[in-house]
Length: 250
Ligand SMILES: C[S@@+](CC[C@H](N)C(=O)[O-])C[C@H]1O[C@@H](n2cnc3c(N)ncnc32)[C@H](O)[C@@H]1O
Ligand code: SF4
Image (tube, rainbow, N blue to C red):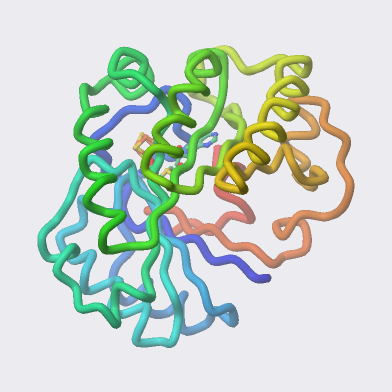
C-alpha cells in the first residue's frame, strides 16, 4: 500500500524529547493539493508538528476528502477544536485520529513533553472517541517503559486500540533507548496484552521486522523490504522537503 505523510506544520505546543521533527514552516494548501492529487493511494496521513495548531485544518481535511481520500490525523491530543468536532457526519466518517500518549502519569508526561497536559489529553480522548475513529500510539524508551501498564490501562478503559512502537533515535535525542533484551521482553509482554485485550494492542514488534533502522538500532532481524525501500512511501516535512520516511529526516 502506498503511503503519503504530510507534515503540515512545524509548529508544536509540546517539546517531546525524542521528536524527529524540527523543521520550521508549513505546507501551503496548494502544496497539499498537489501532493494529494499526485498520490495514487486512497489514504493520506497528516502530522507535523501539531496539526491542530493550523487554523485552516478543517479546510485541509475537506480538501483531501474532496479528492476521494480518507485522512488520518496524527496529533498529540492536547487541542480539541470546536470547528473540527462539529464537522458533519459524512466528513467525520472519512477522518481518523491517531493520538500520541507516551506516558501513563502526569509526572512522566511532563518529563517527556515538558508540559503539564496529561489530564487534558485524557479528557480530550473521551470527547474524540464520541465523534471520530480514534487510536492511541506510544513510542517506548527507558523513560516510559515502566509505565506501559498504566498507558495500556487508559487504552483498555476507553476501549481504544493502541499501537506500541519504539523510539527511533535522531541527532537531538538525549535519552536512553531500550536494550535489545528489553525489546525482546517488550515483544513478549505485548503478545500477552494483545491476547488479553482481544486485539486492542498492536505493535510492529508483533510482526516480522521490515525496518532497517530498527534492525540497526535494536538488532532486530530484518525480514523483508519496507515501503520506504520500495519507493512506496513519501514523507513531506513542513519545510516542503521530501523524505523516504519520517524517521529518516535528520
Ligand atoms: C512527529 S509527531 C506529529 C504529530 C503529533 N504532534 C503527535 O505527537 O502525534 C508523529 C508521531 O511520531 C512520533 N515520533 C516522533 N518522534 C519519534 C521518534 N524519534 N521515534 C518514534 N516515534 C516518534 C510521535 O510520538 C507521534 O506519534
Ligand atoms: S512528537 Fe508531536 S507533540 Fe511531540 S514535539 Fe514532536 S510534533 Fe510535538
